[in-house]
Image (cartoon, rainbow, N blue to C red; front, side, top):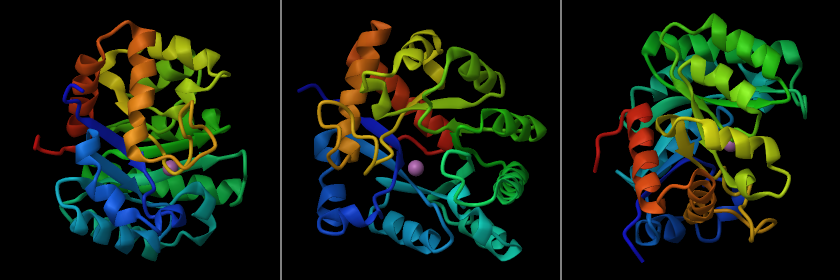
Length: 261
Ligand code: NI
């Protein structure tokens, strides 16, 4: 096997589904081609755990600190201060994951918007990228992103939309995070998107333990399975897998401000 280095730019390795084998799995990732992982926080209680995970795996695991829209109703000024102080840690590279989720609506929409808005403002103030979750909320999501477009940097995590939506995000300077859904049979719109999108704006991700690529859909996902998404992406774009992997790896380092290891 040729030496391929992947950067999984969106993982949830702190999920309970990794409790039995988390440390061994992460330590084994470099041997399975994964050289870098960005762990995304979802709620305030995750933030110290993300920092501790990064400290246990220096140079391999980096983190994002933020409040997911599902937890927006617990967001306070104190939470914002906690995220800001987490950004002082050298391994915490981004604000995330943040955004809007109108599919589940676990928090009221007004609370989701206020939480997203405050975190976008923080990221802008601190010059940090954001990791964005947008589920069935494109209109409001774009409105808020446009309101913060000055200095905006970030990734539309688990992007699965049309090229029109992709174009709006690319025009804001954002990257598109491509995960296991690319391998699903119903990914028609996304196929066109990934064929047209510029290579220097694509990122590879897993969203593990969720979004497991085919043919393992339904099982637990982990960063090493990003290889399956990479293979599909390379085939769709008619590109060499190793060259594409190298480009996506560089994209991740660039966006998250990580020095090449
Ligand atoms: Ni996620």
